[in-house]
Image 1 (cartoon, rainbow, N blue to C red):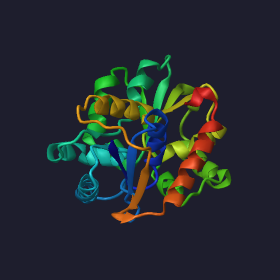
Image 2: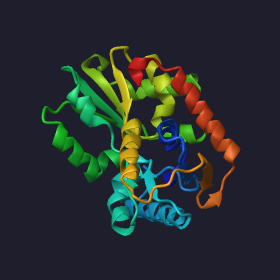
Image 3: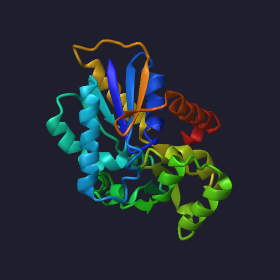
Image 4: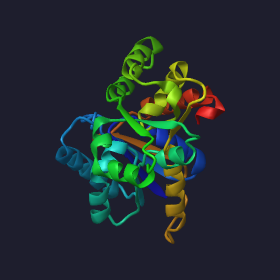
Length: 261
């Protein structure tokens, strides 16, 4: 089966990584709209146009399901995509439901882009699950471009995070939710400055489990050969470059303690 993955850049590779673990025998087309990254600070109509163009491109390539592996794109464009596409469309959702369910009398802090936090889709999700008003938000927009530029040096990232978190009493929090698919690249760095009692979670695994349920329900499903094709804004990309990104992320994941997964 051919499954499309779309993100504004390399963030969606953190979701593709989970798909390769859980569904290794499917064929994947990954589309990074790196020409227009980041999405989080752009007008919504422009983001919708970019997402629509990418989806049209991938559908023309014969995909049978599409994962919008970008929280911002999901917030802005998922409903429109589902109205126009005849294939399963799976979007991202910040993992605030499990965070609230398991809050252990502690607050929940959500890291995301500015647009994701402002969008009606996110606000509705919060209003449905946060009846105790324990969720706080922090936009970390700059991390998107740090990841896109492959900047992971703790000497650069830690001062930025410390400044952003300076006004937060971290002893009040039990869970941090990573609400942008670029942010899991920094789980190891988050762990250097965040108290050990705080869990760090994201929605990647839940998204891939949802994908698995969706494709298993398709009568026309055929397993693939485990192939991956990469595209940048509609052009065939350097497979080796993206494979290196995936391998780097896999190394980050191996180094993480179990409680942070």
